[in-house]
Length: 92
Image (cartoon, rainbow, N blue to C red; front, side, top):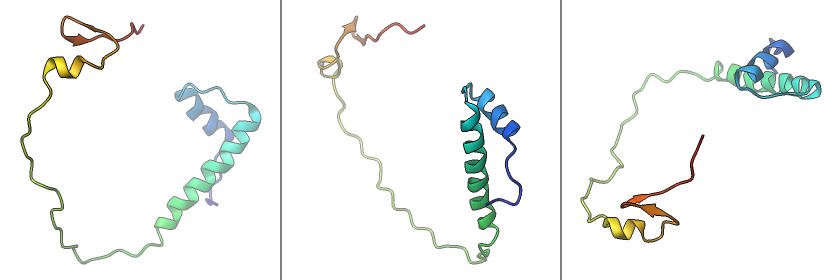
């Protein structure tokens, strides 16, 4: 576990920023879990640094141009379309 335990007020602050309502038992549980997560970051300090640069090899393939779908083909499975465009639900 991290040397510095996470304060429940910090958990509440993060929850407020994320607009998440937490019950008191959840605050305590997440404080413990956050401390455990931070302890994993502390473990990274024990990893020795490596001075040698890795040999990098490009594993990506070259870009290739292919024919795309026509507008009609692209819209044929759309549940709804209008004037040649996909039509989705109103979002407010």
